[in-house]
Amino acid sequence: MKRAAAFVTAACIGGVAVAGCTSGAKINTAVLPRAPSSSASAPATQNGTASAAAPPSAASSGRTAAGVGDQIVVTGNDSREQLTVTLLSVVDPAQPDAFTPDAGIKDVGLQFRITNTGSTVYSDSPDNCVQAYTNSDEQAKTTVDTITSGPSLDNVTLSPGESAVGYVTVQDAVGSRLSRVQYTPDSGFSNDTAEWAVTRTVSGNAPAGTPAPPAAPPAAPPAPTSSPAAAGPQQVVEDYFAAINARDYQTAWNLGGKNLDSSYAHFVAGFSTTASDTVTVTGTSGSTVSIVLDAQQTDGTVRHFSGTYTVHGGVIISADVH
Picture: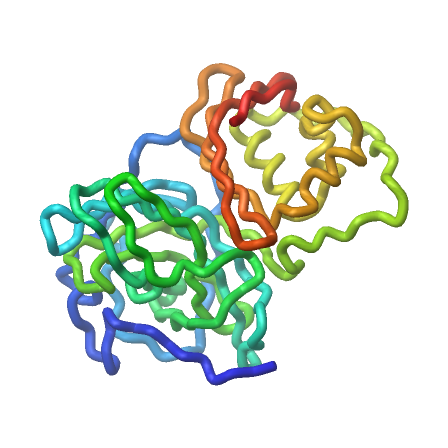
């Protein structure tokens, strides 16, 4: 099924740069403290779609860019408006929900957590606040089409202290890759813009929430035969959740699931109603990794957890998550 995409570009109207799209906008890459993580740089790509004038990037201005998973504080035009915004993940390509993009175009899901850390109610349309760019500074188009990775982040109304988690969908050319993503409050008209460099993505081509269950309860997979150098505690936890999201339960079991559940079959069954897990590492202390976990369910709800994982020898040996 196809539908003519409806594009929302409040910050760039009719190809004329205004407000958050002006070259004088403040680009904010100052992240809140989190444990460091390493990731490879995204390859340079080109998007065949026309773009409006692009705001300056952190890289072009000599700033150290925030990355996927980092939290950035931004303010609105009202001095009482303050948000802590996290780009949780970039799903590229994303699996369309009901409407297939035109030939040569793909959906990309940008998952955000928006927390109102100000002193007044924040009401906005996040799809108007988001801009995404390729390495050639061409702007991807925002679309109202939905994806299977999780619920859309449509209109939000947040009282102080409240949060919302969801996806904004953009479209770019097949074969291209995003290099940076921006969030500008007040539908793109604030003078404070958060920016993240896109250095890692996940694929969403397998419909979320539909793991392929085996015909019979699976036997526990064999332990790995090789003995590579053990990864650091944070990397082990991130790899564990990446394997779960990829439905690679054998790898997740070997990375520590075997120490967290009574059997492999029960471990796999535990994810039957989970569409995706988004983990944010908030700190490490020796072998202990502190996390915040947003578990998106297949019915569209999101369950929130926090706690710690303990890692030894490249394997999770225990968890205390509530």
